[in-house]
Image (cartoon, rainbow, N blue to C red):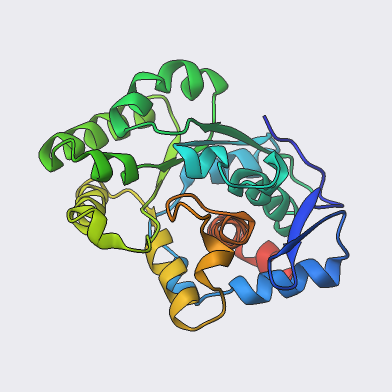
Length: 261
């Protein structure tokens, strides 16, 4: 579990995303946010988050479970504090002052969508979250579990989580260098987005966000990916956490987010 205070980001990637400093100065952190910034149209989604919104309105802790595989767990990060769920919590606390935010990291490296489905009761529902960020699909694509099967699992997971009274946001794939190694990678990406559209589930389009940062030259491959070209490093995690936090904060409390731009 990660439960940071708003006053500091325990460890932050700054400058060229090659240095990690504990308690980095806010202007250095802000420079990192600027490098990661993408348009609202690219990172946003139209669907509402009613359960998360109600938690804030009623003064309850906004509990978010980050369900996923290695890129949720934080494989490749220099510490748990530089994983995307930790950055997400720190940024949401900054963007939504006066509210208690708790992000629980339930990432398990190597997990497929089916494995995540099987641990939803214990790892997700028992935490009584208002919001679940479900990052999945990469391992299914690499293993080619079958696109129809993958889609069925996603549908079942969405039903299960919604019946438990939580909002759900999908996080889709990251772009991977040498994608030709996985010829069906984009097919699984599109399959996730198809299920999202069919079930009216918001999608944080990690693939598009990171692809734009790379295309525009604001981040290099080695600032996002580790040497194996599959796992992210601190720069990638920082950009995912900050852009996703901005999107969620604007969805839940646009005026609160606007006040700290």
